[in-house]
Length: 68
Image (tube, rainbow, N blue to C red):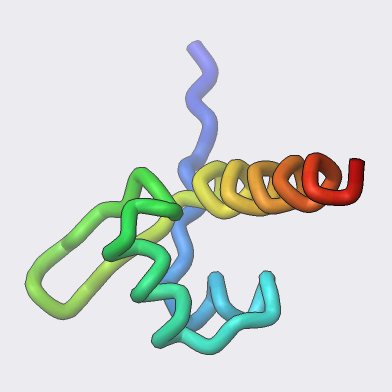
């Protein structure tokens, strides 16, 4: 059996990868635009890499729709 390792990022790491500050990433998480997220406790949030990829794909799709 092969198991893929789930890569998770902190909001700060997500912000660095997509060019936003960590507070903006937290706002996107709270608004439900980046899902799923894992809350380890009240202060620790982890975001899977596939959720970041899905958010970026959605943003690119919205951008291409608005240009047409």
